[in-house]
Amino acid sequence: MSHSLAGALALMQPHLDPAIVSEKVFARMVKLACLLPPIYWGGFECHLGDGPHSVDFHQGYNQVEEFEKFVHFFSARLGSGNLDIFKRLKRFRSQWALSGSRINKAVDKVSLEFDVIRADDTTRCPCMFLFLSPFISLTPTDSRLMELVQCFVSQMFDEATAKQIWGSVKNLSLITDHAAIGYLGAMTSREKRALRLVVAKLPLERLAKIINHLSPAIDSIQIDPLLSKLKDSNCAFFLNLDILCDSISPRIGIECYPKSTTERPDGWPALLRRFQDLGLCSKDQAGALIQWQGLTTPQKSKTPWPAELVSASLLKQPHEFTSFSRSLNHIKIDFSPLKRPKAKAYLEFKHGWMDLKNKSSEGADKTRNRERE
Image (cartoon, rainbow, N blue to C red; front, side):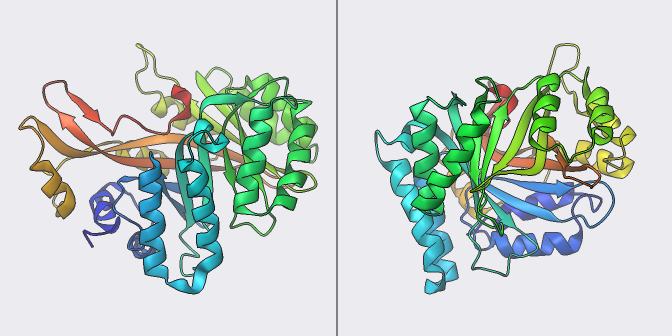
């Protein structure tokens, strides 16, 4: 187990309350993690509120070399029966590695999303997300965005789909008033091909107008009380839109990132109380999300530490120690026509080397929290 990501999941299990991740779901995640390389940046997408609490699993890659390691590791374990998946992944890897390409210039980090419930279906390509640095302006005349969208979509789907989706993106840019794109994703596991666009740091007033314009079927009775409750929450808000070949999906998401201040270094407790008041999160779930956050070290863990990290620690300085940070990255609210809003929590873990001299953790601080951009 130590030669895959499963070793890291074993370290995380004591901190995952059944209120957000059941034992049955965790067992399926371990099975999936055995197919993934020991690259120690990952996370859990947990559904909150009532109903079935499904979970998606994420693994992140800071460098092309890490992504290449994933492709080799994953393909070796799945065998040759999934050639289409690996063709897509290898095409993307080639563009990310190609110096001067639009993807090479724009993409800072990459994350893959795996459906834990359907992990046995190895014919499904994981969804892929590209984190951009710097953000790119959403304007129809910005050639950088056009080149990035068309290149990315053609690699993950095909050229015809890329042209159709870019037409929908151009139409969107006419109503968003030069907003910035923070990251984008290929929703490859969906029945309908879609490009996820995440529009960065919009004021709530603009969010409401865009939602009403794009999805008038979403009742304002759902939106207005919720946005009113979040109005003075001191959060950064990101808008999630799924761009289809011929339209924009009426399903819309809002990501919430509490901002840290001197007075409120951790804004999560207050924000989670608001989600409880809105019926989007139970008290037990809120407590589990707060409890999740912290630092895992060999001294505190009763679970065996991954062998490759023990070996790597022998090459470090005496004041440097292996550790895993655990954080709550953001919470997303999903709006769909004729349905109640739903919330998801995005938990994150990342390995780093804790420097006792500087009291910092190299690697563990470099999260994908987009509020920091």
